[in-house]
Length: 344
Ligand code: BGC
Image (cartoon, rainbow, N blue to C red; front, side, top):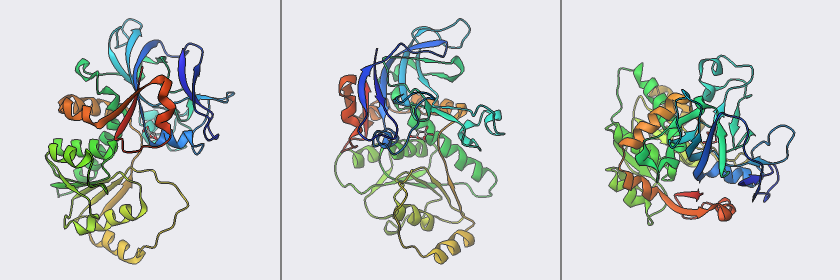
């Protein structure tokens, strides 16, 4: 079968090639779609990623969507089901978080991730998965279910924000989402679903993003957060851009919560007034935290959020669909795309 593979650590090594049929999990899945994100592009540039032990190449891809071809009886999934695969697996000797099913909070870094860290991904015509890591989707989501994995990431971010407010006397009324890429737009969807007054910031002034934001019932801004006059209770930061990140921390109401989801490259310095920032965080009882990946419960939250969303709106997030043979084109750069997807 054909697969999109890469040699981690080696820039420009991605290619579509023949690979053996998948091994491993008891559920066999026919791939329908694969989403490509910044992490895949980072791996393709040789800057991230690990091949499985004893191998040079890794099957790329962690944003999956497929249809079950074979599944054991009583496995919770059956032939014909629409499924996505959970990305992360716990460390072999579980830390206290992995032992409780919270591998997204792994403490020792020994976790593995499909298509990213030491286990093959979902970028092949067929893939196998352990039944407990296959998440069933509403059959009506067959055109947009590939958005599940990024939605699970923002569902976790929101779940953690909720946990902060659960111990507070204040409840959030407004949110700013920085960045109108797929993560930002999906974070905005969940903000609107929570009934929050939602603002989305991005640098672009044209293209589909402003309209997508407005159609969600949110406000779009292309100026820096501190110039908007908005003092949000929550910021979900989805750019990873240094100045945007620090402005977000300064912009919140008291007590404000900032959740950082953007993975930024290291090695760039910016000048900040550390004293002023610290003062704001302290005097406002603010909380700033990072969030990555997602556990089972967040996939369930994501499945519910997608099922409740306007499917036409979700479909507009997927701005490019290419066949597997052209998959490496999507690894060059995001271009103007919101979400680019490989179709099988
Ligand atoms: C994926 C996460 C993963 C992270 C770090 C992201 O692109 O969505 O599931 O944990 O990369 O590897």
